[in-house]
Length: 156
View: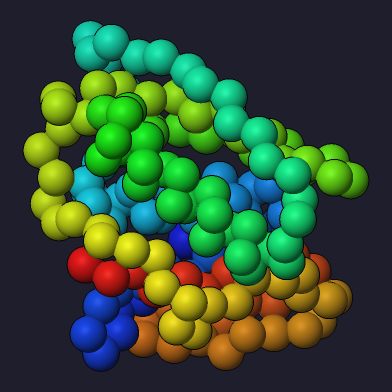
């Protein structure tokens, strides 16, 4: 597992550890979607109509803010366009992020909870140098670089 649910005082968050910047984004999406619906594995949606959409955005902000932007887009797809993301594949170039989202119809999904917003409280996303560590917290293991780390809190 490269993401872990992180209970906070009033809301819930996730902590993510990945080997690359692009996989950090994909793992954060998976973690967020699993907060809302406990099983988003593609096999769970066998028989439902599945589609793909590509989303691109200029890299015009730091990684933590870009991560919030991507997660907000996933929420938008779900709430406004009725596209529940079950898988993503991110690619980052020098000046752009491109994410291919695989989705099913949101109307076919019974949600456990609803995320209202991605907060900036305790928001962090960055590269960990070789040997650098992030202490474990609330049952989440210590994360030791090299790798990419993110901490995101959601308003439920």
